[in-house]
Amino acid sequence: MAVIRIAAVAAHFGPGIGRALDKITGIVERLSQDDVDLLVLPDATLGGYIGDLRNPDPAAGPEAIDPDGPEIRLLCRLAGDMTLCIGYAERAGATRYNAAVCLTGDGVLGRHRKVHQPAGEYLAYAAGDRFAAFDTPVGRIGMLIDYDKTFPESARALALDGARTIAALSAWPASVTDRASRMPNDRQARLFDLYDQARAAENQVVLASSNQTGITGNLRFLGQAKIVGPGGEILAKTWSKGGLAVADIDVDAELARARRVLRHLEERRVDTYGNLMADKGGH
Image (cartoon, rainbow, N blue to C red; front, side, top):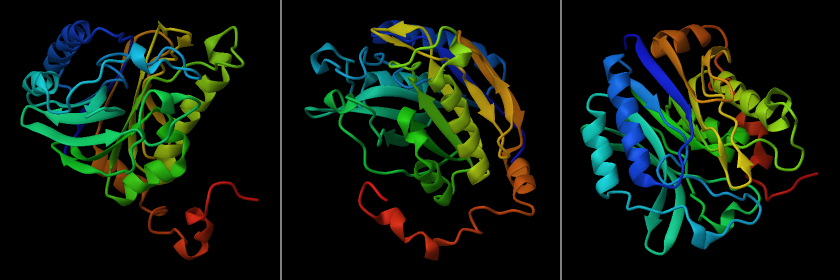
């Protein structure tokens, strides 16, 4: 594969789906002119995120949409040759999932439902139950949503399924219990960067991390979109305000270079990891 241009977005997307689609249209049209091949938008781009992480009101939204509905079809037409990853609330009968879809002008390429749920998020969404990579024009990709990337097993499952790039879509807020006066000092801001770099480095993959910005309810989102190389190095990054992290990278060449001597996936000792399948808890 040749060099591709990856872009990860930090921006605010609220509850208005129509307004979000207008904003996305402008972003995609502009980045198409800049030859972006892979665009990663935040979690909850369509419909916004819940405004209270501990006690969300399920009746207050976000609005859930059909995974094959007109909004997704519109995004496919809009994407054209670009590979686009975007987060939304998915409607499945009476159930709502925090979901992401990856698509191009040819249609949907892959989907993910958020598996790991922090605090009271289970009151607003059902949980997904799998991690799976899929093929795209820019190589094999896997997706994570928010809290998924806290757990090393999530990204590892995608890497073992052949993902060479991981799109990590987030609506990741600053700490709700120990808020810092300055965003760079916030505990969640530090963890957000740490997880992005660790997940890339331990699996020797490229990671594109997007995030919401601004405020929804009592949540203040961090921004900090970034592109991370397979050695854990940050290739491009935004800060707490809206922006775009862009990097040109030959994914195959960079993964080959990272894995030339140390091959983390091959050098695992799975015979020693028996307790990974144990019940929750541990001693």
